[in-house]
Amino acid sequence: MATSGTKTFSLDTAEVIEEAYELAGLELRTGYDAATARRSLNIMFSDWANRGINLWTVEQVSLDLTSGTSSYTLNAYDVDVLEAIVRVYDSTSSTTYSDISIERISRSEYLGIPDKVATGRPSQYYVDRKETPVLKLFPTPDNVTTYKFISYRIQRIDDVTASAQDQEVPSRFIPCMTAGLAFQIALKRNPQKAAILKVEYEEAFNRAADEDRERASIHLTPRVRY
Image (cartoon, rainbow, N blue to C red; front, side, top):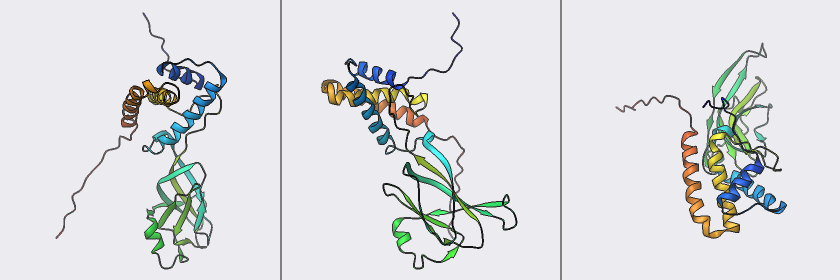
């Protein structure tokens, strides 16, 4: 018998909720059942940001730097900055530039900088991880060159606000998403089954997280001291 020839399987939020209720040994009966499940799903997505880097949530973001300004409020949905460069534009052309690495420093290292108002090409940055993150640069961008701060940022997963929506989750995470939601529902509605579902959820998440990684070659060079 021939296969379908399609590779588009997905579940909308209503189907995810229905599957989770069945895994939890329950039935989806009321509108409140769906609403409380959507709330649990969003809480679970928030927790995923604490479990490591989800590659599909990493976005490249460009920030224009302003002369004399060292502090920039990032987006409220930015979780953290992974890595960054400073793009330095040629003074004679708006399309000619060089990308230069910039070092991330800690809170204590930034605090220890004696002259934070010194100007020049930014070479270090600190991310103050408030509810809305704040980027602090050193040195402060000067007025001689045009700079951009180009970074890869971890961002929040899109909110689920209706059962008719899809989720911002790749297909390889569908098993752990349904198992995780089933565990959350069982905690509230069927505690006897929660322990079993937690094990299944953690195993499914670990499988997905282990696969969700970059596959670039790594070259290690020993450091020789004389």
